[in-house]
Length: 432
Image 1 (tube, rainbow, N blue to C red):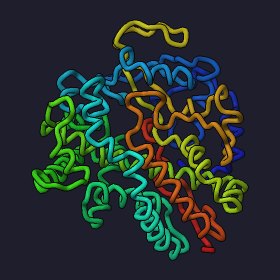
Image 2: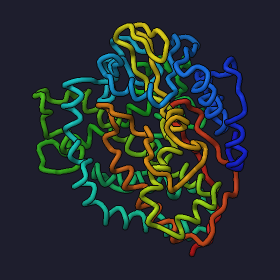
Image 3: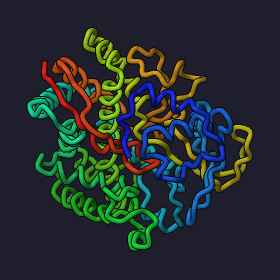
Image 4: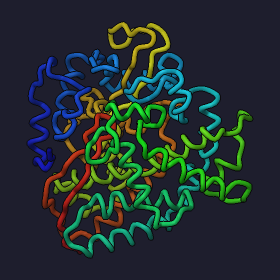
């Protein structure tokens, strides 16, 4: 299915009443048209903001939390709503959790220790030192794409740019970029037949039950990372791999081989996918709202403000899951110990109680309290400053280069209720 629907039609559609009985956040086919997810979220926020969603076996259902305030409450309270039982909808046994746990699935002291290993590398002083590199890389990416005239914006711009940044952080050769992109697609797209080697919950996926996302691509990522670790161990490099293999976390417990595998895989996936989809959604939004593109052309100083609207609008990750550690009241509902509690960040980013006219794409929106990176959580996205910087520089460089840009084909979505992804964005460009 496609999402080349005019923006006004989308806005009108999400406001059409959708019966609560028709809401099904577990049905992945509801997430392929660019409209149905927003209609479901709208209904839930207004009628049942903490909603019990049934799931097919082997899963057992979850609480869907859709209002900004409730999402923030869950995200802040790691003692009551733990990440340690996994952060996606898939339900794992204790052995699987032990084998698959990354920094995302840890709380408390160990989480902080592993996070601190790379925290400085994603801090302001380091990210600001990349500015010239990022601007030069952006120019190279855009010059090559715009010279084609008609091209897939995802392939030539949105995917190409972040993966080059990741390659720099990992200190791997640019010729490996396409492989990194393919791995990310195959792993995150584990519910999309166009991407997945093995579809999640298929009979064949049982063979890979102990791997992240049940994806055989994880084995390839592990092998690649292990070779990098072998090369960097004992050296004095400052890249992310060197820091992981040569520094001891501040809790004094060295990374195990499994810790490294899962940390490296997370870097490969998170370092590319979310920024890529945010850039794509932002470009699509500007195509659908030419008045907003014109405002940015007329006043480039608005772009840093626009970046926050891009992040709110894109909501590249639909949800993250927690698990209740005790019986608790949430939004008037009685959540039981062991229940899955799912924060729908995308819904929170359209909450009328927080955002005036939330279905308006407004590049001048002030006080933009979006929750794209989390809200007050110990798991706040480690790379949020890097992502903001990449997006800002991309549009600072792109917009002045455009005399005209228009959509020239269908815009297929990733079949997923986890990643809000766009597969292709065909455009025709007249360079300035």
